[in-house]
Length: 142
Image (cartoon, rainbow, N blue to C red; front, top):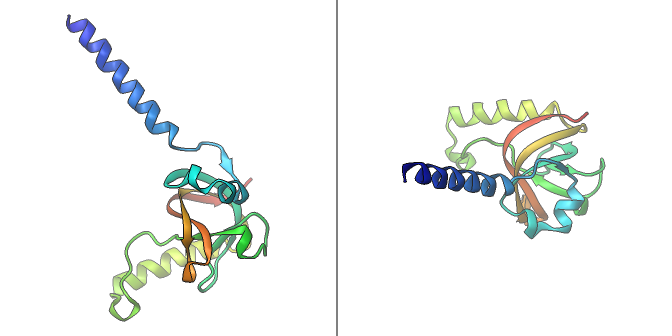
C-alpha cells in the first residue's frame, strides 16, 4: 500500500510541475505576437526578442527600431518599489540609477529579455497595449 501511495504522490508532483511549466513560454516571442494575443500571454513568463529603447518616459521594447508606440510594449526594468520622487531615499535613487545605467547599454540594440508580460494599458499615461516587467534576464540577442 505504501508503494501505491508513493506512486500517486510522484504522479501528482509531476503533473503539478507540468502545469507550472506550461504557463511559461520557452521559445522567444515577437512584440507583434504578444500584441496580437494579449490575453493568451497575460501574466505569463515570456522570452522576447526586441529592440530596446531606453529614454525618459519612453522605456520600451519594439519589433523594429523606431516602430512607434503601436509596435512596442512598455518596459519596466526597475527591480523594486520606488516612492514618489519627493519621498525617494538615497538608496532608492542609487538603486534606480544603477539599473538604469545597465539598461542604457542596451539602448537601440536587439535584446533577449526574460520577464512577465502584462496586457495594458500600461506605461507612460497608459499609452502602451502591454508591458514586460519582473525581468529575470536581459542580454544581447544573437
